[in-house]
Image 1 (cartoon, rainbow, N blue to C red):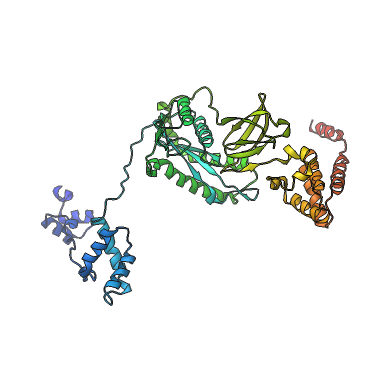
Image 2: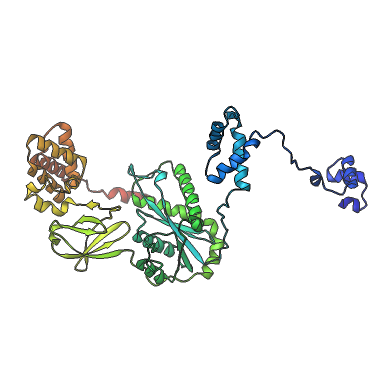
Length: 476
């Protein structure tokens, strides 16, 4: 049309437009565009086999819209024998789909939100067990605390093992200090560690509110049953796990030597994901607040008294401490991954934190000095299974009980492991058990001492520096 109006001939205009001259002439004679001339088909190409039972279908769907087409189809065959055959199921499925779209109830609607720079950071926990991570060949069940800026999609995360306040506090603070700034608000789902889900008038728990106040953050929470309100971080979970899976495939192994090496892998992956977000992140920094001078403690502190069994009870779990502390009052600092025991202003012990409910962590080194003096207490000790550091210790105990029925012999071996070297004693037990020898204290001690003497006899010759001097002279 443009070319014709520029005084081109019909033939040249058609040629330049990439169409036949006859087609061009037809378009000129008509006032409508080609797509407007297509007729919409409003008739059916074949008779609907379910037309006669539309009322029954409506009745069933109005009764319960959750009914599947297959269920309704079976009901129709039951009510109208020999009227329908299995090949018509697909037709009914299309009919039900149309019914839901035209007569069904309104569906849940997602309303995309406008994000402003520096305004909001969102976080949540995501389970990583599906990726099959192992540490030294053993399954490593864990979560990732995942933090995302909703405007730039800058993200980071921390390894943790439960959705506790300590994990939330450590994860959020790690994220803010890696970011180097603080957004105006922080949104979570309805974590019990952060949100008062009871009738308490306070919106957030006291500990979480203190954390928000320390960083000058405004707290936000999603409404019950509306996880889509935290959709930015939910989508980031999916993308992060997919990227993690791909990176593990490229690495060629999902096994790591230590938890620390796995942590480095996770942080490096987040850094890689954030590389393309620098431009929008700069816009965020202009609007964000500065960090406070110091971090807030990532732990809960308990003041507890060590019982006569040399244990303390912290966070629904039982932990052993050295028997020297019996009847003393200690401070237990509960972190996301560990518990520290402090006495008289000094840290006297540290152990991994237990998760779940009513667990226990008993270190045989804490109690063996007195247990070896009272061997009769071992047999019915409620935490006895914790006094077998490895499977070889367990097998040694079973062999001793079968042959000598003397608990004290095993406790002497355990005492040796506590005061000498657990790994050396374990190696000695392995040698004795595999050779079929009863693992008595004297037999274990003989092997341990022999290994120590062999190590002491290692001779390292003096280095002859004349060879080095001759090389230096040649170089000169």
